Image (cartoon, rainbow, N blue to C red; front, side, top):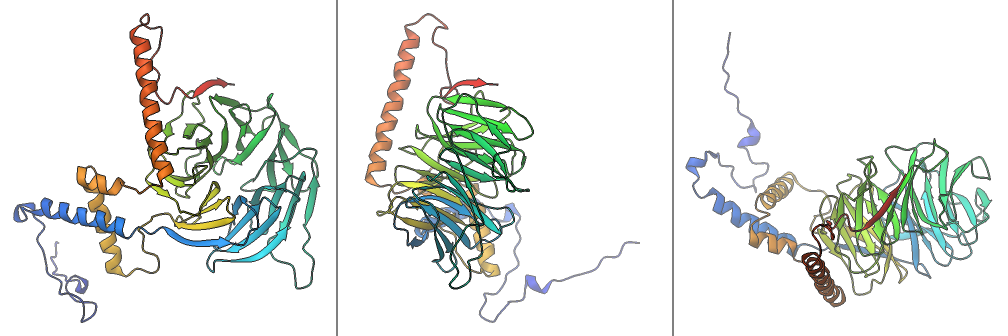
Length: 445
């Protein structure tokens, strides 16, 4: 038996308050709305212009260090806590909500080379030029109690990189070798070396937690499995990579920051050529960090800017810079996907919005609907020339603008020269190489 019932939802026609506009029922049949597309195009254009008007990404500057900021670490369980290490051996713990420093530790003599928070968030590790690994309690000591590390390990060489396992009490350091340490022991439980003089960074895979990768001084990126006694394989590039970051959602992908001004996203199963080459910086890229969604990553460069790249796109969607910000050494993406932190040479840590035009704070229901509607309109008309031009335009400092033009001319000259050589050579003597294949020298297994 079929029963038909009339039902009316008061939310469809009743105003929330007496100041709201009256809700009018609409028929969305396209035949009754012949001017729907022109009207939506105008709304998309206005939404795109308004996004650029409201794009104010800079939030706060955290100053207090007396030397250049060399490294940063996110807290594993607290969104509002950030740790930073400077070139004078000082470590600071910041409260991002209040924009102030809550704790200062004189941790090392010389540079603080790396920091990482333990997976449970109760303590953190730091390494420095004084050849020591120190474990510190995350809670500040009581009033009048001297700040002392929980544990100190004296190494034989200078450590340059540090990372902690995601699930157990194991951490990795790199210097002349890549060492795997157990928290209960003062000597490494395993050391990896593959004919390399030194390593600059080491990172654990956040998904496949037994895998890790490192960047070496011989221009190679080496992959390891902690369950094996030997490294897995390595890819040698034309120039040295400074650091790398694993995609937190896709276990096989990682992105490395290179000295040749580019970033390269690799699939670890197929290292013969990168998946994507990201090409917008005009100087060496010093750091990279993925967003927690795995869809984007942020990069820090020697050209005094930070850029946000979609993981599958060649060009960046956003570039952040200020007049005072100098060479950006380190960068982190917050765990709630809303903020980006950058540390630079002039002793400041800056807090940025991940989406420059996003409104912070609590949004009403109508604001959320309007924001979602505008976003869909911008996606629908994103390839229209006028909308695309407005959405893509970014104001750049003069030195970045001129160098970018110069690099474009140089790339065109190299492409033209290669074409001319191919024309005047025996067929097949000069093979056609894509941009992705030009930067890999060899893959060693």
